[in-house]
Structures are given as structure tokens and as C-alpha cells.
Image 1 (cartoon, rainbow over the protein chains, first blue to last red):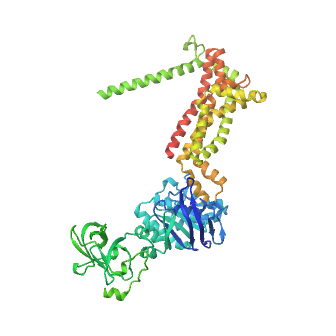
Image 2 (image 1 turned 30 degrees about the horizontal axis):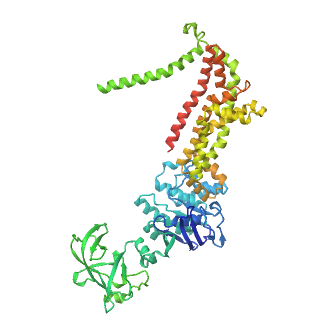
Image 3 (image 1 turned 90 degrees about the vertical axis):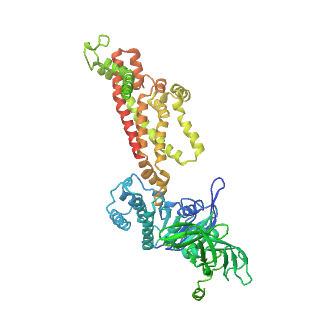
Length: 360
Length: 262
């Protein structure tokens, strides 16, 4: 496989005719061999960023795209040596599966034996042996996306680009293909940029994730960093569920008074809100509870259940509870929120301290 | 009982309408094959008139075929890129251009022909050649090619296919001939059949533009109706039908092919 290459975007912005700014000036570095996921809601600029990297779109004046040391800003997509997988497959309906996959190789005018060899290789990689002569419209959605994947990697691109490749597939197939794409990316070691609005996909595939919002990168980091140390409320909310507890007042001993009880969090002073994830809140007997409330709704999820607990605040707290226990609506419930699971984007998170946990 | 009556009524009405339209055609065909139309069928059937038409008007038939094929070639060469351009261009002026392209269909053929005569009539060589008629035919048939190709292009998701091809290293030329053209083939086919049929049957423009040396089949038909025996005119119609009916059937077939693709 070709040696991988890093991607650098310098001050890349994109303004569309009519003055719509899809992308604010953006600096981004994708390391060689890394998979970077661009994650965000629709209209956040993630696809525009991908298209600028691919060469399908140009950045506004002043922007610069580098592949390794090479400035490719002025090159159209066909000269950039990229492989791209599209949401709607974009397979050529006039060609068979094999002809689709071999298209890029024929464009490169490779010798016939080499084309046959590579075709064989990639079809094995995406588990499509024996499908070569099929017509495109005789394939299922999952098979189509495998063909698209094979077509993109057959040319051994320097950079692999994915534009929401699994969005059109049903949940089960999406999970399976996601795992396969992950394996494939590790196997190939090609630098990859993957656009999605699905956080599970982002977590599973990304070495790093760039969460985007309104044309900017809200946070760039490993999946763990993004999840456990979200840079702001948007990121915290977009990745997984998050509870916001309004701080009513601070006690003399530094404890925080919130609706339904009080919290201890020495690392969070002078904040008006504290955040925590539903799965980090524990259900405890009422006399040991930090916060008390009433169950207003329970949603059975199979492995767990999501309880909505009204503590008197603006919105109920979401907590994750064991799925076998029942909490009828109106049940009084006690919750423990350990200081290690409370966070605020502006404050550094304390690493979980074993001793403190034992005492708490 | 009631529905049966309704069905019978509907069927008879349909048959009546069919008869109304088919009988004249059948009579005309029969007239072309009858020894003497005024005597009737008992005078006997003959191919004499068909033969005579061939002696008198073979050159108009050949010219019509030549015109249709040349017209087809030009409408493909102009129409396919034009449709592609309309597909890729921004909405507003592209719409205006598409309307403009339809103008020769809306304007009476005689007016188009007159305009051509006013503009180019003084170039005598050109005026006297079949190419002058060809210009009229291209003007008239081009919108049909553009429309047919454009509608297929719009449903084929071509921009995405092109982006995919480009990502695999294909140059514009390779994309156009390797991806765009093959994926709008059914549109080109439908447009081509339409163009050939319209060109063979075109009378208005051609009648104004023709010279005694550049008569097409429909102009020859008018000529024979005006100056020959009824049997000869009818035999001529027969030849015309033999040429055009297969084309019409093919248009239906191509239309169904396009629908299946969708």
C-alpha cells in the first residue's frame, strides 16, 4: 500500500454565492495514517471541509490545502490521488461490479494482469468474491457500499475520504459495515477523513474526532477526550446525553447547592452549572443520597433503562439504571453524584482518585 | 349486468373512434394498391402504382433519408452537449435558454422558413443545396433531442457519478465519454428516434425551403396529390407509412426502456 500522507488545512474558509458562510477560517491537521472523523449536525460545515480536502470544492482565497509537504490547493480532485466513498454510493449503473471497481485502475492504464490482481485483492478485502459480473441494480444497499469502498481503495489512494457512507443503510447493517470499515482502515493504514452525524460511528472509527458546529471546530480530540472532557455544552450535549444541574448557591464549606440536594466538587468553584453523564449517576438509598427526586418517566432500553427524575430543576435529570428493577412513576429516588463525574467545560477534570472513591 | 353494459358501450365507442381514424388510412393504402380506384377493388390489386412512385420519386425518398440521418448526427453532436450544459448550469438563465430552444417548435414552420430565407436566401449556392433544408430540420428537431436527453440526465444523478469518476482520476473527457454518455444512452435513443421521425415527416419548413432539385418525401407527396392520379398519391402514402410506422413503434419501445431504468 502507498505510504500514508498527512493533510493540513490552513485558514480554509468557504463562502457560497449569496454570502452564506459554510465554513469559518479553519486550521486542521490530520496526521499520516490517522483516521479523523468530522462530526456534527447537518449544516455544520463537515461535508464542506471534506469536499475542500477532496478538491471537489476550493477554499476561499487565502486558504491552503497540503498533502504532506505538497500544496494541492490548486489541483482538481482527479489529480489529488484520493479515494472517496459517497453516501448514495455513486456507482456507475452502466458497468458491472468488477468494471466499477476497476474503473480507476483502467483510468491509470495499468496492465491487464495488474488490474485483475488488484480486483481480486480488493474484492476479497470487502468480501465480494463472486460478485464481479453482477449488475449494480441487482445489489443490496450494503453490497453497493462495499463495491464503492472497493472502488475507492483499489486505486491505492494517498487519502481516503468518506462522506456519510453508512447513512443510507439500516441500523444492523450500519453496525456491521462500521466494524468492517474500521478493520479495513487499520489494515490499510491510509490517512482517512470520515464525515458523519452519528456519534457511535465517530467513536468507533475515529483516532480523533473533530466536533463541528456552525462552520467551526468546537473540539478536536480523541473519542475519550471528547466524551469525558467536552469543551463546551454543545459538544457535551451532541456526544451522548448530558445533565445540566444549575448551582443555586455555594455553602460555606464549598459544597454546591442544587435542586433536590447538594454536591461536593472541590474542582468546580464559581460555576453556575455542573454537568454529568446519565450513566455516572448512581441510584442509592434515600438516606445516602446527594440529590433526591421523583421518577417521572422510565424508558426501557433493553440493557438498561433511562429514568427521568424530577428534582425541582428546570428539566428532569436523566439517569441510567439497571433494567430489571422497576420504578413506577412518582417513586422517590435517591441519587449519588460523585465529585469525579461532575464536570464543567471551563474547568479541568480531576482524574478519578481511587482513595477518594473509597472514602466517598 | 350494469357493468357489462357499460363495458360494451365503452368498447363500441373505442372501436368506433378507431374505425374513424383507421378507415381513411386503410382506404388510402387500398387505393394505392388498386388497379383503378374509381372502378373499385374488382379491378384487381397491383403493385404498379408503387412501382411508378418509385420511378418518379425515388430521389425524394433518398433525400429524406439522407436529411434525417444528417439531422440526427447534428442534433446528437449539438443536443447532447447542450443538454449537459443545461444540466450543469445555474437555474435562471438555463431555463430561459431552454424556452428559447423550444421556440422553433412553437413558431409556425412557415415563419421559421421565411426567416431563414430572409437571412440566407441570397447565398445562392447554399439556398439551392439540401443543406439549407437541413438547417431548418435541425432547428425544428433539436429541442426534442435536448429534452429527451436532459430528462434522462436529470434522473441519472449524473453530478454524483461524475464526482465519483473524478475522484478515481478521470479527466473531464474520460468522465464525459465514460460516464455521462453511457448513462444517458436511453435518452439519446429516444431523442434520435424522435428526430428521425420528425425530420422524415416535416413539411411546413421544407415546403418553403425546397427547390425543384431538393424535394423531400412529404413535399413530393404534396406534389403528387396535386398533379398525379389518386392511385399514385396513395401508393406514395403507403411508402411513407412503411418508413415511418417502424420508427413510431421503436419510439414506444425506447420510451418503455427509459421508464424501466428509473
